[in-house]
Length: 237
Length: 189
Image (tube, rainbow over all chains, first blue to last red; front, side, top):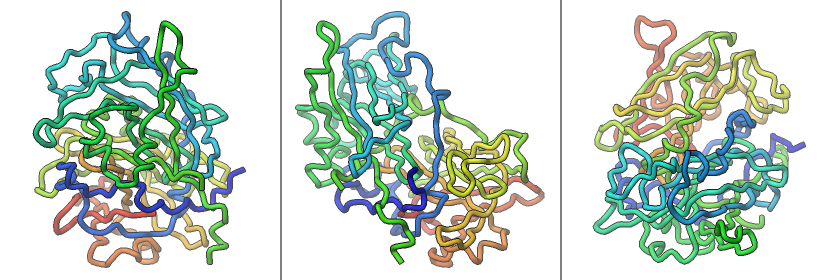
């Protein structure tokens, strides 16, 4: 069994965004200005909620079948593994996803983008990883959309992912992007870090082998959660 | 290490469509043993304006200091009716409110007792990764011995203290200020 007294590894410098990222304009009034206070990890953070299948309903892993008709757009399979930083699978992780429809519109009251809503697409799903950390869901390729960050700002197509792993310190919310998207170089959110490899890992890979002929394209997206130290905390003294 | 953890990205403005299904206004049922309390507050940005698109995820021990899920000391045994987790969205005034029991004391890894607290993970549009903070209870005498509180400059500790609302025995107030003179303390682990 995993030793819960083992702390989580320190964050690798340069691979996670800072709170204040001036090109992302709303961070200017919302990012804390005082430095974060570094404190020891305790059981309060090493533990975390465990979610079971009770949180999941039929079709939560198929965003194309949540309504009477088929949604518009390119049908896609998104699949991959949730792993820790030592390449070990994270089983039973709750993964929550949400996204815009194929026209780039979210089913949300404050989204006023002049693109149509799709009555057959809600854009939200959730599922648990299996024993090998594997997940798979079906959706529609989301559209790009404009936003108010700067003149003529457009978000590249993306799917939001939220994950709970083995403890509070593995909590991750990220966005999955699509390969070859011409908007990526201009997006202040994707470009919030300088580490090129870390950025590339947010881009899914086209996966011909996982496509369903005549039915769906497929994209592979592996997600890495913060790992635990291999040495128990007592040995750090 | 093979690869470092995937980079965090903001929840953006539309996260409610994916996350609201798990909303709750309580970390336990009325049946849970312990002193039942309510916490409420508001979130403010640099201009003192309420933040209407944020969510709090709350995690705490039960009245005996035990965590749900798993806990090496207690094998995941917690009080009946106690979940210890809730996802709470703010309203258009940036306000939130939830119900729970007063947490028990949890030890640090070297065995020192910590003062009762609730861990808060705060997500919103405008920040690229969630923030960690803690709610402590202003009147608790154990605060003076707490390892985490003692790491915080004395003049900033008050930002972590929920205050009992005058004339009430069970309602606490705790606000979050993202910037400014009383900027809330946030932690890095």
